[in-house]
Amino acid sequence: MAAFPEQTHAVKKVPILIYHSIEEYSGYGQKELYVRPENFEKQMTYLRDHGFTLLTFERWADKDKVNKPIFLTFDDGYKNNLNVFYIFQRLKSENFNPTGTFFIIADFIERPNRLSPSDLKMLANSGLISIQSHTATHPELTKITHDEYELNHSKKKIEQITGKPVIALAYPYGDYDEKVVAETKKYYTYGLTTTPGPYIKTGIDNELYLLPRTYIKYSTTLDEFAEIVETK
Image (cartoon, rainbow, N blue to C red; front, side):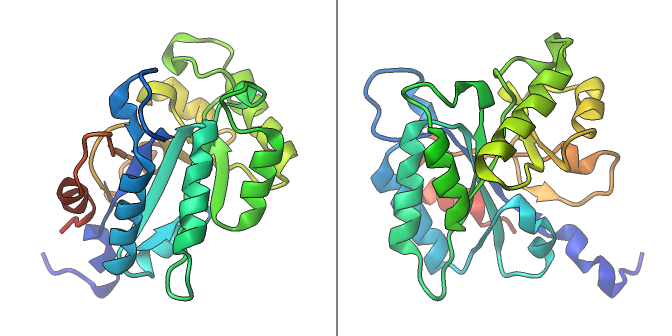
Protein backbone atom coordinates (compact mmCIF):
# COMPACT_ATOMS: atom_id res chain seq x y z
CA MET A 1 0.00 0.00 0.00
CA ALA A 2 1.35 3.39 -0.96
CA ALA A 3 2.28 5.64 1.97
CA PHE A 4 1.23 9.26 1.86
CA PRO A 5 3.78 11.88 2.95
CA GLU A 6 1.81 12.81 6.07
CA GLN A 7 2.05 9.20 7.24
CA THR A 8 5.83 9.11 7.34
CA HIS A 9 5.95 9.95 11.06
CA ALA A 10 3.85 6.89 11.89
CA VAL A 11 6.95 4.69 11.87
CA LYS A 12 9.04 6.96 14.08
CA LYS A 13 10.20 5.22 17.25
CA VAL A 14 10.44 7.50 20.27
CA PRO A 15 12.28 6.21 23.36
CA ILE A 16 10.71 6.96 26.75
CA LEU A 17 13.16 6.09 29.50
CA ILE A 18 12.34 5.39 33.16
CA TYR A 19 14.69 6.10 36.06
CA HIS A 20 14.22 6.13 39.83
CA SER A 21 17.16 7.08 42.07
CA ILE A 22 20.12 8.98 40.66
CA GLU A 23 22.61 8.22 43.38
CA GLU A 24 25.30 5.71 44.31
CA TYR A 25 23.68 2.59 45.76
CA SER A 26 24.16 2.44 49.55
CA GLY A 27 22.47 -0.86 50.33
CA TYR A 28 18.91 0.42 50.69
CA GLY A 29 16.21 -0.75 48.27
CA GLN A 30 16.68 -2.45 44.92
CA LYS A 31 20.12 -1.80 43.49
CA GLU A 32 18.91 -1.92 39.89
CA LEU A 33 16.60 1.05 40.57
CA TYR A 34 19.65 3.24 41.14
CA VAL A 35 21.85 4.89 38.52
CA ARG A 36 25.15 6.40 39.61
CA PRO A 37 25.29 10.17 38.91
CA GLU A 38 28.51 9.77 36.92
CA ASN A 39 26.85 7.14 34.70
CA PHE A 40 23.77 9.31 34.28
CA GLU A 41 25.96 12.23 33.21
CA LYS A 42 27.71 10.00 30.65
CA GLN A 43 24.29 8.96 29.31
CA MET A 44 23.19 12.59 29.00
CA THR A 45 26.47 13.48 27.33
CA TYR A 46 25.82 10.68 24.84
CA LEU A 47 22.39 12.15 24.06
CA ARG A 48 23.90 15.60 23.61
CA ASP A 49 26.75 14.39 21.39
CA HIS A 50 24.45 12.26 19.22
CA GLY A 51 21.88 14.92 18.41
CA PHE A 52 18.94 13.96 20.62
CA THR A 53 16.19 16.40 21.57
CA LEU A 54 14.94 15.89 25.12
CA LEU A 55 11.23 16.58 25.51
CA THR A 56 8.61 16.73 28.26
CA PHE A 57 4.93 15.89 27.81
CA GLU A 58 3.98 19.54 27.43
CA ARG A 59 5.87 19.23 24.13
CA TRP A 60 4.51 15.85 23.05
CA ALA A 61 3.48 17.22 19.65
CA ASP A 62 7.07 18.32 19.00
CA LYS A 63 8.22 14.70 18.76
CA ASP A 64 7.28 14.80 15.10
CA LYS A 65 9.15 18.04 14.46
CA VAL A 66 12.53 17.61 16.13
CA ASN A 67 15.62 15.52 15.54
CA LYS A 68 15.84 12.28 17.53
CA PRO A 69 13.16 12.98 20.17
CA ILE A 70 13.44 11.27 23.55
CA PHE A 71 11.58 11.52 26.87
CA LEU A 72 13.30 11.00 30.23
CA THR A 73 11.07 10.14 33.21
CA PHE A 74 11.93 9.78 36.90
CA ASP A 75 9.50 8.05 39.26
CA ASP A 76 8.73 8.55 42.96
CA GLY A 77 10.16 12.02 43.64
CA TYR A 78 13.32 11.06 45.53
CA LYS A 79 15.50 13.87 46.89
CA ASN A 80 18.43 12.44 44.96
CA ASN A 81 16.69 13.41 41.74
CA LEU A 82 18.14 16.86 42.38
CA ASN A 83 21.27 15.28 40.87
CA VAL A 84 19.38 15.19 37.57
CA PHE A 85 18.80 18.93 37.78
CA TYR A 86 22.44 19.67 38.64
CA ILE A 87 23.70 17.53 35.76
CA PHE A 88 21.24 19.17 33.37
CA GLN A 89 22.49 22.57 34.50
CA ARG A 90 26.10 21.57 33.80
CA LEU A 91 25.33 20.19 30.35
CA LYS A 92 22.89 22.88 29.22
CA SER A 93 24.21 24.95 26.33
CA GLU A 94 23.03 26.98 23.40
CA ASN A 95 22.71 23.79 21.36
CA PHE A 96 21.53 21.36 24.07
CA ASN A 97 18.55 21.92 26.36
CA PRO A 98 18.20 18.87 28.63
CA THR A 99 14.74 18.37 30.12
CA GLY A 100 13.01 15.61 32.05
CA THR A 101 9.77 14.70 33.80
CA PHE A 102 9.58 13.93 37.52
CA PHE A 103 6.57 11.82 38.52
CA ILE A 104 5.78 12.71 42.13
CA ILE A 105 3.85 10.75 44.78
CA ALA A 106 1.87 13.67 46.14
CA ASP A 107 1.34 12.50 49.74
CA PHE A 108 5.04 11.60 50.09
CA ILE A 109 6.24 15.13 49.34
CA GLU A 110 6.86 15.99 53.01
CA ARG A 111 9.01 12.92 53.70
CA PRO A 112 12.72 13.43 54.45
CA ASN A 113 14.08 11.49 51.47
CA ARG A 114 11.66 13.06 48.98
CA LEU A 115 11.65 16.35 47.12
CA SER A 116 10.15 19.16 49.18
CA PRO A 117 7.55 21.71 48.05
CA SER A 118 10.32 24.30 47.67
CA ASP A 119 12.36 21.81 45.59
CA LEU A 120 9.39 21.13 43.34
CA LYS A 121 8.64 24.81 42.86
CA MET A 122 12.27 25.55 42.02
CA LEU A 123 12.47 22.66 39.58
CA ALA A 124 9.19 23.55 37.86
CA ASN A 125 10.34 27.15 37.44
CA SER A 126 13.75 26.14 36.06
CA GLY A 127 12.43 25.21 32.62
CA LEU A 128 14.41 21.96 32.83
CA ILE A 129 12.02 19.76 34.83
CA SER A 130 8.31 19.04 34.37
CA ILE A 131 6.56 17.96 37.58
CA GLN A 132 3.80 15.39 37.00
CA SER A 133 1.79 12.84 39.02
CA HIS A 134 2.59 9.35 40.28
CA THR A 135 -0.70 9.27 42.28
CA ALA A 136 -1.22 10.31 45.89
CA THR A 137 0.02 7.21 47.75
CA HIS A 138 1.44 4.85 45.06
CA PRO A 139 -1.16 2.03 45.20
CA GLU A 140 -1.81 -0.66 42.64
CA LEU A 141 -4.56 1.21 40.82
CA THR A 142 -6.33 -1.95 39.63
CA LYS A 143 -6.93 -2.98 43.26
CA ILE A 144 -8.45 0.21 44.71
CA THR A 145 -11.82 1.95 44.59
CA HIS A 146 -10.86 5.51 45.62
CA ASP A 147 -9.53 6.49 42.20
CA GLU A 148 -10.60 10.11 42.52
CA TYR A 149 -8.32 10.73 45.51
CA GLU A 150 -5.31 9.03 43.94
CA LEU A 151 -5.73 10.69 40.56
CA ASN A 152 -7.37 14.06 41.16
CA HIS A 153 -6.07 14.93 44.64
CA SER A 154 -2.50 14.24 43.56
CA LYS A 155 -2.95 16.37 40.44
CA LYS A 156 -4.40 19.30 42.39
CA LYS A 157 -1.82 19.12 45.17
CA ILE A 158 1.09 19.19 42.74
CA GLU A 159 -0.48 22.01 40.71
CA GLN A 160 -0.93 24.07 43.88
CA ILE A 161 2.77 23.69 44.66
CA THR A 162 4.20 24.31 41.20
CA GLY A 163 1.57 26.61 39.72
CA LYS A 164 1.78 24.60 36.49
CA PRO A 165 -0.62 22.13 34.85
CA VAL A 166 -0.28 18.43 35.63
CA ILE A 167 -1.15 16.55 32.45
CA ALA A 168 0.59 13.17 32.77
CA LEU A 169 0.26 10.21 35.15
CA ALA A 170 2.74 7.37 35.64
CA TYR A 171 0.87 4.26 36.83
CA PRO A 172 2.48 2.86 40.02
CA TYR A 173 4.17 -0.46 39.23
CA GLY A 174 2.95 0.02 35.66
CA ASP A 175 -0.37 -1.38 36.93
CA TYR A 176 -3.45 -0.52 34.85
CA ASP A 177 -6.58 -1.96 33.25
CA GLU A 178 -9.51 -0.58 31.27
CA LYS A 179 -11.08 0.96 34.37
CA VAL A 180 -7.84 2.65 35.39
CA VAL A 181 -7.43 4.09 31.91
CA ALA A 182 -11.01 5.35 31.90
CA GLU A 183 -10.50 7.09 35.26
CA THR A 184 -7.14 8.51 34.21
CA LYS A 185 -8.72 10.09 31.12
CA LYS A 186 -10.92 12.23 33.39
CA TYR A 187 -7.91 14.15 34.70
CA TYR A 188 -4.89 13.57 32.45
CA THR A 189 -3.83 13.72 28.81
CA TYR A 190 -1.14 11.02 29.08
CA GLY A 191 -0.74 7.76 31.01
CA LEU A 192 2.59 5.95 31.28
CA THR A 193 3.15 2.23 31.77
CA THR A 194 6.31 0.22 32.40
CA THR A 195 5.87 -1.84 29.24
CA PRO A 196 9.33 -1.82 27.64
CA GLY A 197 10.07 -0.48 24.19
CA PRO A 198 9.87 2.81 22.31
CA TYR A 199 6.64 4.60 21.52
CA ILE A 200 5.40 3.91 17.99
CA LYS A 201 2.22 5.62 16.83
CA THR A 202 -0.35 2.97 15.90
CA GLY A 203 -3.65 4.78 16.33
CA ILE A 204 -5.04 2.20 18.76
CA ASP A 205 -7.69 3.23 21.29
CA ASN A 206 -6.32 5.11 24.30
CA GLU A 207 -2.83 5.07 22.82
CA LEU A 208 -1.72 8.09 24.86
CA TYR A 209 -2.69 6.27 28.08
CA LEU A 210 -0.63 3.18 27.26
CA LEU A 211 2.75 4.83 26.70
CA PRO A 212 5.66 2.37 27.04
CA ARG A 213 8.83 3.05 29.00
CA THR A 214 12.19 1.31 29.12
CA TYR A 215 14.13 1.00 32.38
CA ILE A 216 17.64 2.34 32.68
CA LYS A 217 19.26 0.40 35.53
CA TYR A 218 22.32 0.42 37.76
CA SER A 219 23.88 -2.28 35.57
CA THR A 220 23.05 -0.60 32.23
CA THR A 221 26.32 0.01 30.38
CA LEU A 222 26.81 2.96 28.06
CA ASP A 223 26.78 0.60 25.08
CA GLU A 224 23.48 -0.87 26.26
CA PHE A 225 22.11 2.63 26.80
CA ALA A 226 23.09 3.57 23.24
CA GLU A 227 21.36 0.45 21.91
CA ILE A 228 18.16 1.37 23.78
CA VAL A 229 17.99 4.97 22.59
CA GLU A 230 19.20 4.48 19.02
CA THR A 231 15.88 3.06 17.83
CA LYS A 232 15.87 2.39 14.10
